[in-house]
Image (cartoon, rainbow, N blue to C red; front, side):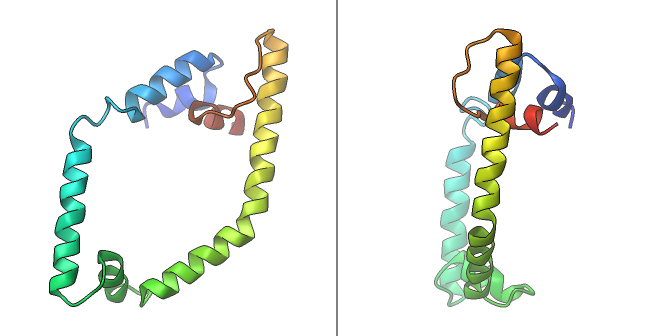
Length: 122
């Protein structure tokens, strides 16, 4: 929460980039990738022991969703419905960034970076 104001209010893109990379970049998590891989392996073992094809199959059977297939179908339908709106949103944010860069006299790179979205959504 303490870095959100930087992402949404800081005009200097380089500062937003540095903060985002410090929090989300490769150095931020050090050995967590190894721990995540271990967790995935253990979850697969648990699911197999309980007679499920995957952790997703197991966990969905325990929740209100009922099954992995139901969740997959729901998410696929959401993706289909939201894809065009998402593309339009990205185009709007890119246009805002381009206008902003032109106002500042900075060369526009044509990209919407992770550290840009919070600022241009603001």
